[in-house]
Image 1 (cartoon, rainbow, N blue to C red):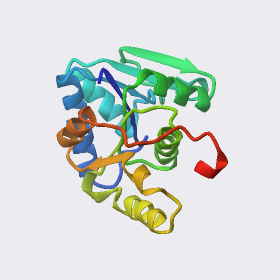
Image 2: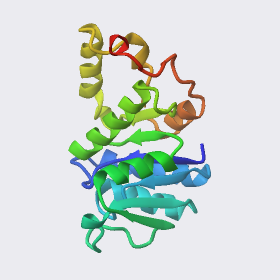
Image 3: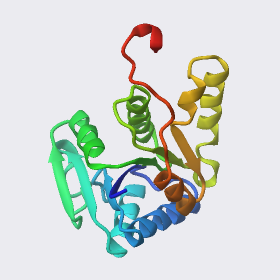
Length: 193
């Protein structure tokens, strides 16, 4: 993996554990020579992550829409900051630049970005690993919803393997490096959905 895209909050969250694990992940990315692609912000977990990667000598590419690119939000010290017009362009560029995806704790935007890229994997549009860094059990309720959707036959069993999850940043990166996509064929007909 040359670069990973990380979706994360523009806030730091309620517990210090989010900050600590985010900085650990950033340090590991830099040490392992894995570049970061992210939303380009200097605030919240986004800024902490970018700063940790940079401090470890890593490459950081931010992708930010022009309406958020002001100095109060955009990180000014990145390897590269790409400014786009829309959120859709942002997500497409981030997906193109990355070899895999991790969601750290975050709110609506983080969840939306992760589930869109996960859906693209389900549809066979990419075969890159999609992972949740489940810091302090943050994603436990979400994983229960996924398990419920499996039980209720809204998600196929083979598609559960599209989500990697772990609480430890190093183990998660190792799992992503070994990732073999489940047997997901591109969906061509509505009876296959």
